[in-house]
Image 1 (cartoon, helix red, strand yellow):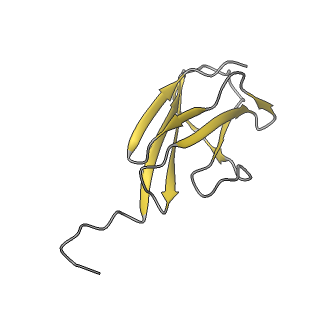
Image 2 (cartoon, rainbow, N blue to C red):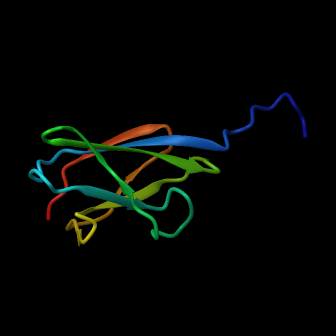
Length: 98
């Protein structure tokens, strides 16, 4: 392999922000394909403002592939509508509806 070429990073971060007030005592969990093509393991989002939740996920073997994701309220109820999407090393902000 020629060392003159820049190698893509093996990991990258994707910042996911949900603009919603889900009420005290509730939580959001995000699921997506950042580790593989499966959605088996969710990541709990952190409430950083009363109406803003955030998760920062590590994208393994990052390339320019599009990462799809969606949130669940209290890890039981999927949000409605299509999946959201973003690229590694970016931030996606959206409003989920339940």
